[in-house]
Image 1 (cartoon, one colour):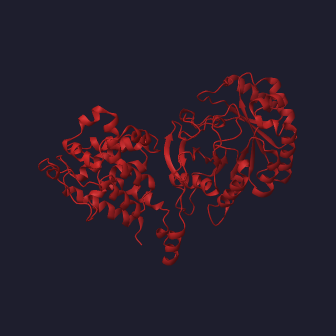
Image 2 (cartoon, rainbow, N blue to C red):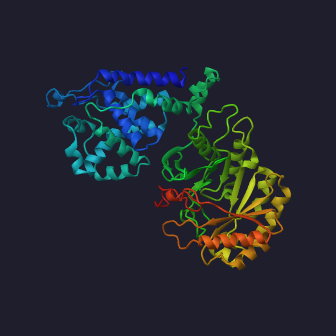
Image 3 (tube, rainbow, N blue to C red):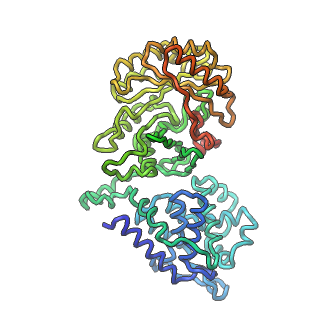
Length: 516
């Protein structure tokens, strides 16, 4: 079985054939065209999958296939102008899929012609700017979209990337332009193929077992349909499962100097409607399965270069917090199965104490976090007054503070020494829960527990009704809690410029509404 390096060499040899072949209707070669498109993608800080798609979008032009012959404009009444191989995008996508490239790369390659049909239908100036060859080939490619087809295309999770790839394709026709060579892209192509989820690439398995697994099973971590990088290095991924646009969640990678934290989601949407939380405005769609939860880690670990595993490698992602979308304890069975996979010494091998479950207060299940899962606990508390907490967190009407504190005491009794301390999360809302009296009530409520208070400056989101406490008020509140004998700290907001900070997560696409 070919290695990733060998596969990349084979693909690149096809592209190198393009140095001998002219690009349709232009005075540049197919290879020059591909390298120009990849350079534009790189210059615009596209992710690696999109860069690879830009480089390989015309690879179908070079794949030998009887059913794809070169077509000339003379066949459609246009003289001797070459319009390229009609259908090359589908052949190229299928070829790359068999090699082991991701669904995203193959989908982008397959759709760069479809994107031309969209742009032709929606932008009159776009058609005017097309070359004669592109205009002639359009009729064989289906012509401009209808309005219904255009609307459907706009709902595609990779819509922005597909349109941008088409624009790079159209602009990559500059004679004499200097570009980096193919070797520039070899490393990212090899690393991409190392992430293969194809059983045929698992060289340690007998061939008969590979074939059986390939027939009966599939490994799917989920598709990254949006990837945003904050100015502070925080990265937010929008992940989609089972090709269902509604089954989308956000996952956040938070790099720090001595560790890296991954914030994972446990549900699509949320049923709790906490009034200060953006996710609470998104109706619950469904629970995530254990593979979908673990898939968030696997995707992030590949991005962070923690995979493939290497001896004496310090993990870039060392900690996992269940603080993304959803209430983890309302999906206890799948969260429990996911943690078992994440902590298995024969698998990912994370220490249980490096994982924290954050709950809004599902009191009956809290002791099981210690007795069964052996991971850390964070409680979204946000007020030590029952009336106030019920107002901002309706779950308090079901599990009021007295019941919640009893469960926290049980957790502390059952937990091991490394995860016994409970973090109480407390979002600071101006004139709602930030008075000195609120601080004293908080200390009185949790003083019998091994506790740490994490004060969270409120991160506004579109439509939020609350205001953030001033930095001075947050600092005073923190000082008072510490003076009264409870460890406390103020969380530094991370990723708030891309709506990735605490309380800001919400699937950007889906039945529940588009807003982030």
